[in-house]
Image (cartoon, rainbow, N blue to C red; front, side, top):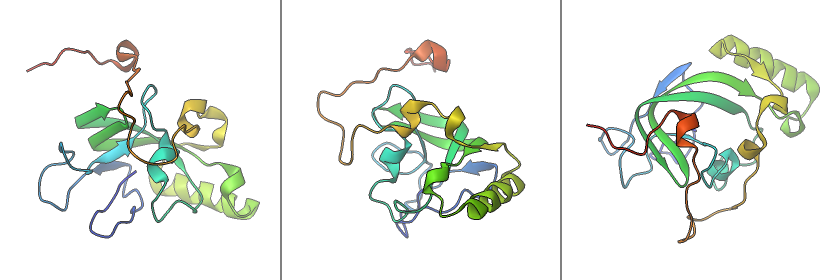
Length: 159
């Protein structure tokens, strides 16, 4: 999810590859700020719906995007905030779209705009769409449960 703190709205994904920016003038993402490209990762507390609650877009039809994050990337209890991300694929939940022709038109428009595969929800892992928390910050006793080996990450800090 991209977020524009100057308007409080989430702009549409600009291109296949996007770079985060912050209206405060620093590089995004930054500690102590909400800037960055948001994503969810298995083992963190929020799924993608957790990010969309309390935004202007909550009632709109959703599209789930698989992204590859790079540049500066923060991983914490809420998920991922990245400097840059590349859109790899999209999935549309049919039950949130108003009508079949509208869904079909959306699939075609998204394929044309981004040049990535667009599918239904059958390829989306359950943890992506499940959300245990409706709103608010993580509880004080929350902990990450990331499989760092599978993610290609290490618990060591490099130079």
